[in-house]
Length: 345
Image (cartoon, rainbow, N blue to C red; front, side, top):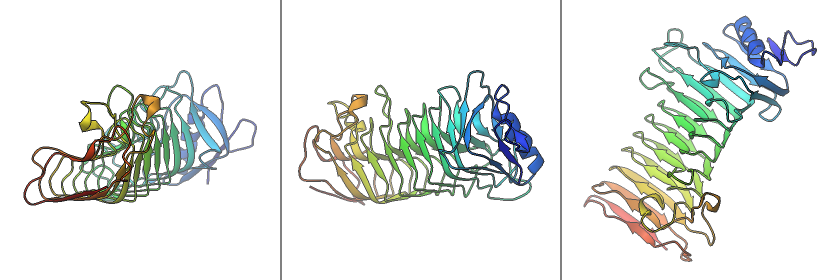
């Protein structure tokens, strides 16, 4: 396996800090072809993207051991990207690596499929595991593309995004699997699930929003999303926004989520349902002193907020009967005749 190391390390591809580590990594990827490249432990400056091609894998020594750090002069759309143009590759993998965008790089990971894969289809499926991203100008991890469904059957596991300038995770691709991930901050929100038929489990987001615009922990705008055992906590915005038909949430918790001020009820709920044919089961409660106080938020006013006109909704929520300020009540809004809504507490 081609590998990359610091200057004078004896690695086949040594990093020249004046040029940036991306030059050595991209050279190693070119040598690997449809193969893997290992980047040894260390913190390396990058001045441009690492470009991941068809069936290529980038491996670090661990997300806090191998760190790529954007530095002055960085140019490009993201720190790890697909080739420009109508990219038709598939099965890219990134694991055990940290990406410090330093408020300079737009995206941490930006993988886009531009057309139907030519070597492995129809599911391009990038795999990200134990990738840590911090301080991006835009989204932390962005997966999508012009190809219908983008990277279908994508897998994102055990990743973490901190302080993204956009969404922590922007998933426009379909048929994905996302598990064990976390989002700390994210000015636009934690997880934007915009591709159809995505499965999520055991993920958390907190501190989302930016103090002037609401940022939900989870926005499920795709149809047929399934979310199990996820948590939203202390957000400037709702915990879970469900606007995709046929979506189902089970065992999810919204803890002190919302702006919390009078007149901002729409953005001060544990769960917001904005589409018909939705099933939600979980807990929504306000802690004493809970809320994203560092963003100016005070927390939850309603356990459940129902948009006008929604029907075929089943919602069963529990709220702690100890309901400190700014909590107002269990349900805001009404549903159609083909629905069942219960909030206990």
